[in-house]
Image (cartoon, rainbow, N blue to C red):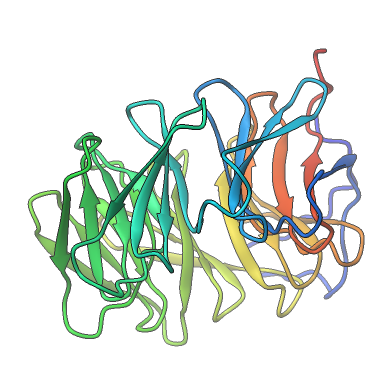
Length: 315
């Protein structure tokens, strides 16, 4: 069980700004100064992998013993988004190099140039069809595990932000600029869902209830949408919290990072929010549920990887 003081809210009644809970957490220093940890995923070997944007590489953290290593030499990667592919390798976007990268757990790197210049690839996810799908400035891209890239032009003005494989065999992506969520089938059929006025959706995941959950950065809320388009939003108690990362926890709740307020948040499926305070300057960013049953997150502000302890370690 989580060790904390419960200060949850309902979907309507709000907590006073600044009211937080306390939890056991640990912070692990990165060996490379100013590594810039950002996106974080669980690898097929149970280790945590994360982009080090300042160091230009991928970091690896073995949970037992908190041992850090790096894949590839520093400065070799222009790492953006990060995902685990169906082939057991790590796949990443390289926004400045305009490439998609593939790196094995042994550190062997392959790079695939995107045909259209200056697309600025952003986020990437494993798709329902055995390929990887990624966002571009105005399009959605697809790459097979053998490296073949296809780009799908979207509707005029589209600005894809984050992307996830939905529970219905389609891809869903957020459109921060236009305040939309869009559904794209692998064969190219597009459906657009309007969100409440003022919405600016960022990170998106599939919840344990098979709905889409996303961070509404514009409204400082977390949204939920069914595959049929029914939308509901939940307010975050701390204003201007700087919502960035989002994941489903091992407890069946949504966990998120508040970069600007140095907090980790938890949202239950019925709308109860709890916030956990971190040291000032942590700036939590990427977040993932670890294989040990705890919540792990990157802290670019303190150059650390943080751990919110839900369960005692077994080792």
